[in-house]
Image 1 (cartoon, rainbow, N blue to C red):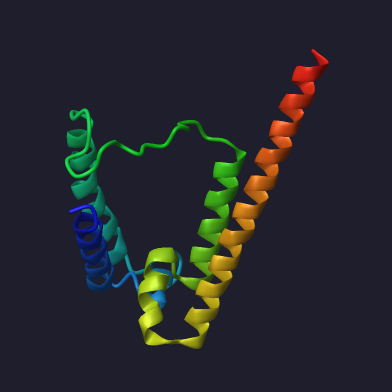
Image 2 (tube, rainbow, N blue to C red; image 1 turned 120 degrees about the vertical axis):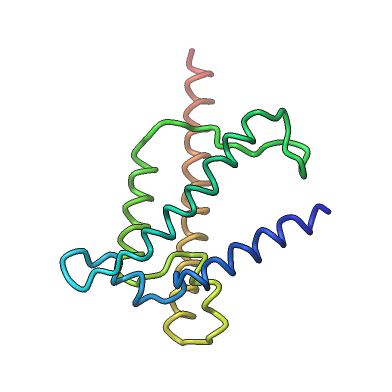
Length: 152
């Protein structure tokens, strides 16, 4: 059961992306073009996603543990900080330029489009670079804490 639930969730998510048109960059770009040929249909998709997810999160908040896992994996940070804002800005710029976010991009790899392949490779390189940068940042922070502990 540990592999079945995520597989089913991924299949439902992927089917939703296909049905909604989120895998079509032109549809996404038309949604973002509010002063041109605006297509508001993806707003309906977002509203439907909220209508399904908000009650789910509310229901999950009443349980001590999830139904199909040993524990919840909730974010530990709740504040808005510079890394969050920078990441959101980069995500938004990338989405606006290309019309794809990571989920639809991975799903669209089945088309074997060279542009999509380049996008996913660049996305993966960015994720790897971020992981390396984050590790270096955490290591430097640990070193500063150790240095300040030995000084005091």
